[in-house]
Structures are given as C-alpha cells and as structure tokens.
Figure 1 (cartoon, rainbow, N blue to C red):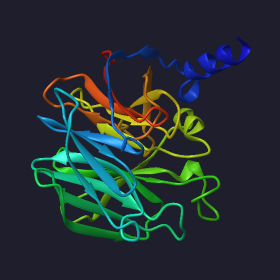
Figure 2 (figure 1 turned 60 degrees about the horizontal axis):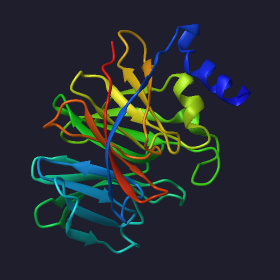
Figure 3 (figure 1 turned 60 degrees about the vertical axis):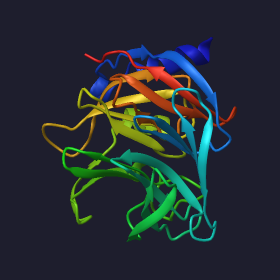
Length: 266
C-alpha cells in the first residue's frame, strides 16, 4: 500500500510541483500477435506487429494474420517501431545494444510487405526508438540508457525529441521533463505519437502508462500535462486515425496487440 501511495504521489507531482492529473484508458480489445515485442503500427485496414527483425501484418477487423516480413538480423538487428505513412511503413531501427549507437529509418511497402529503402542516420546523440510524421515534418526520439546499450557519459536523462525536415536535417530538439524521465529510468522512451488533439503521447520501456506532453511556449523542455494508465507495457504505440482517441499498443509478456480508448485531456 505504501508503494502504491508513493507512485500516486509522484504522478501528481509535475514540473515545479504543479499537479499532473492521472487518467485511465478504456480497454477495447486484445489480439494475439507473436511479433508483438517492440510495438505496433496501424492503417485503415491492418495492424502491423513489430519485432526486432520481423513485422506481422494482421487484419484490423478480425485479427487474422495476412502477411509478414522477415529480415536479415545482421542488417536489421533492432527495429524499434513503425508508423503507417500513406502506403508505406516508416520504421525506426538501431543497432541496440551495440555501441557506438547507430540508427536508421527503414521504409517498407505496406501492401506487399517488402523493404524499399533506408535513410542512414549514422551516429546520433542516442539510439532512434521511434519516428512519426506530423505537421509537415519528421519527429524522432533518440534514447539513452543507464546501463546496457548506453554510452559513457550519457544516461536516460539525455533522451531527446528531434524534429527533422524532409531532407532529414535537424531543425529543433527538446528534452523531456524530470517527472517523465524518472519513469523512463533506467531505460528510455520506446514509443510515441501526436494525438488528434495535437498533444504528444509518449511511452517508456515497461510501465503501463502514457505521458501526455506538449511543446513549450519558451525553452526547450517538453511540458508534462497528464499521465494515462493503459493496459500496455510501454513500447511503441499507434493512433488509429480513422477513430480519434483510439490507440493500439502491445503487451510483450502475452504477445498481444492491445486496443484502448484514451480519455480526453484538458
């Protein structure tokens, strides 16, 4: 009981002692997917369960598996997440847990489930864990870790959100607030995306929580607006653009894709 109270107290403590509301998502469905280890992507008709070097394609309505892609583990050791962008899957990939950290964006044909091209980002200030398209730009998170997979001199606090233009040139970057970094520790952010409300929803590596953030009016640290309890275990998430407020995530322990409805954040 004391431990639960301590967690609840932390969740209410935002930057500078401001209260951060704790909300709860509604569970809609659970669908089995053996590839559900790193995250999930979604488009109008399909779900895509992401493993390190494999992606399973599932019918969104029935949960039936319809196709898959399996890659060479030497070239694709750690696909962290994917997002459906038009007819393509745009995926964040890294060499985790190897160091020095290197990252790439891997693009797939979502219909045929074949690899199309690579954007080699090379060595960055962290390991690419997720990338999404929003407001005419690419938004990506580069993770840092306290132990395995981390580099000397940087821990989870160095995790950052970076905005790129269409030529993958860095245009701006933001740090995460201490209240969220404390929940990332000792790992980092494994998933995220912009909701229909324009806010940024981010997961850690393990905790069944979404952190609702917004870009600051001034400064370079994201603002923590709310925490949402969700029946998923961190990792990459995907907004269902056809149904505002519906998000897909995964449960690594049960190898399932999990569908939830988010509460409205004031």
